[in-house]
Length: 484
Image (cartoon, rainbow, N blue to C red; front, side, top):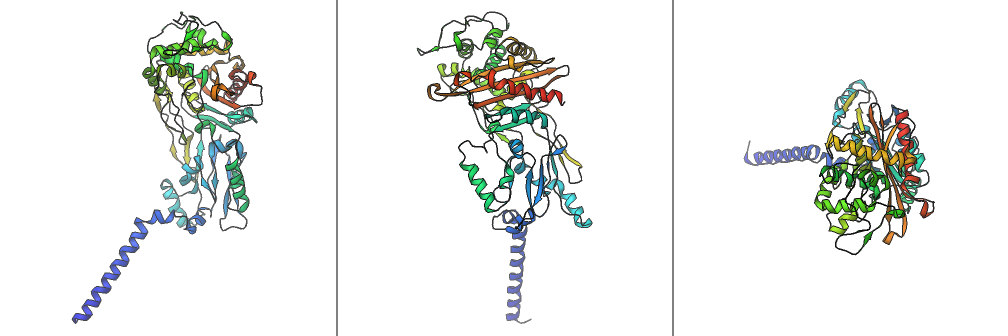
């Protein structure tokens, strides 16, 4: 071969090598990036070319797939009772992507997850149509219905947990929305989406996980736990060192009790039953900010919780003495999600052990083979078994003869705590009504609940945790027990 031909051959070889390198770079290095680009419509067409797997509750799907008319996306998502289940499932839309379980478990539901590689490979040889897998939740349909119907047209949220496992049994938020209204990619879907985004009541906000409220007097359960765990008090029926009136430290402000109830030197049990601000404000100050932060942290405060859907962090603040005293009664900068306060009740009910909350029990292949099973996990130990049982006695007194009698269930032991949290500058707006509780049967505690009613049509003087929130918690607990 002469010199010019050799040069041309080498040059052509370099071009072929460059082409091979470029092709492999695009196919392997940049494959994921190119597949997920919005401009790559073929990937999206393939995604909606087959029916999506389902999200399962109590053995039944709460989702489905329907054919799309007038679109190259063949199938779109559908829901059974979408507004009730949206706080659990989230949405899946051809135009607006997905959220919550629909997003986190998208690989399983579309059939594209690596766990389903064998099923995809097998279908290539058998010629079977590609299918998505299923996500089996921990939700209790009866409890979810009781929570959703109990909230009704009121703005608020409910979270219910199995204290012994951490399984989430109910997760309701109102007002809600129907994900089916924007599951496609038509102009009608876009209008429905825009209307929801502009709604001042924020129906797409998951209040059970993503809204933090002042927890009010429900937080006194945490303050009582801190008092017991730090040895400030050991006997729940002995007098406390609680003056009346009680002046907040370092300032001239006097802390008031609702209804001017007599709380001077009452016991811990009586202080929780009467919901004495003066007693628990002083306990918080006696312990100091760091010990209060430490105890709140053991219950889950100051960290995000993943269920696997992310819940916003509840906050017990690093603060000065007077603000710390107010935070100890659930006011000041103290903020909590309903899930967090359900975790507080669950830890007390479970003899001091706090389990990691979760809502995915299993993942199933398209042929229903189980490819993942959740194993329960202890998150922390906020208080000893002995102190948890003391706190149970206190919370059960609240329901038997205190502010929580509306949560009583015949033949069942119920513990609870009411809360009416101040809202707005100088408490100018309607307060938030709270109730946290648990129910106990012979086999232990199957359910702990937190309810918050953010606003209502009731008169301001009628807004109370015992009046508005406790009946909802009672119905949720009863639904779990009756459908266990």
